[in-house]
Length: 260
Ligand SMILES: CCCCCCCCCCCCCCCC(=O)SCCNC(=O)CCNC(=O)[C@H](O)C(C)(C)COP(=O)(O)OP(=O)(O)OC[C@H]1O[C@@H](n2cnc3c(N)ncnc32)[C@H](O)[C@@H]1OP(=O)(O)O
Image (cartoon, rainbow, N blue to C red; front, side, top):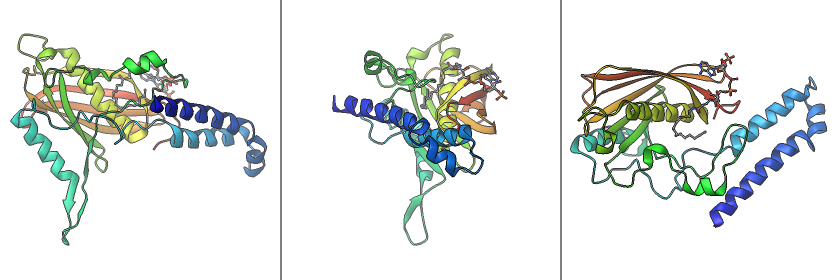
């Protein structure tokens, strides 16, 4: 209840701040900017507000992190998790622990719904909504995955174990489930890099079927950014990298003007 009140207060603050940016501060800003260009000063302020007040997609204050190992994870899943997790922290010569090149991303915390146009979802929807990939209660039955990001290399890697509810062709993963994990990983990558973004285009080539229950790697690479457009390519391979299962390209459109 208190949490909901906080969300509403935050939304009201955001609304008031936007109003202030276009009203109360109008004259001050106009005189301060050398060109006196009202549109410019207004969009600057709105960009600052977007960065400071837009919902942060990842938060440590969430109730449960679905990206941590659970009893359904196979030994291969745990091995790959450890492989990347160990690179999230490195030891210096003096024995201090410092942040490594990789970061484990906790599962997405939808603490505030934000849709293009600034419309918040109703309370009813807010209470019931769950991220599609995290909506199966039984551990191991659906999408078990963890995403690691390497900011320097502009890549993400997802370790994905496909559960029995994702069956398509007998004994293999459904193409829609593969598309879902690709969209989720590339979408997470785009969001981490540039802030909230939505999929505009997703093109997939299925090269070889993924056995149900197996563990695969989903590699996401940020190819280029043009304005609000974020181009990402993706490959799904076997856990040892020897077999290519799926290839994809994705286009995401950033919802806000500025980057994080
Ligand atoms: C909601 C936030 C959550 C944040 C927290 C995230 C947490 C992280 C974990 C979640 C991970 C899951 C990730 C799932 C991600 C989805 O599944 S999103 C759901 C599926 N996608 C949709 O429903 C999107 C529907 N489409 C739309 O809403 C709008 O078309 C869009 C994509 C927002 C773009 O609309 P717009 O902002 O009006 O942009 P517009 O001016 O039309 O186009 C901008 C540029 O993009 C180009 N463009 C637009 N569409 C296309 C296209 N299809 N093909 C080629 N070019 C295009 C335009 O030509 C234009 O190019 P330039 O002229 O600038 O060169």
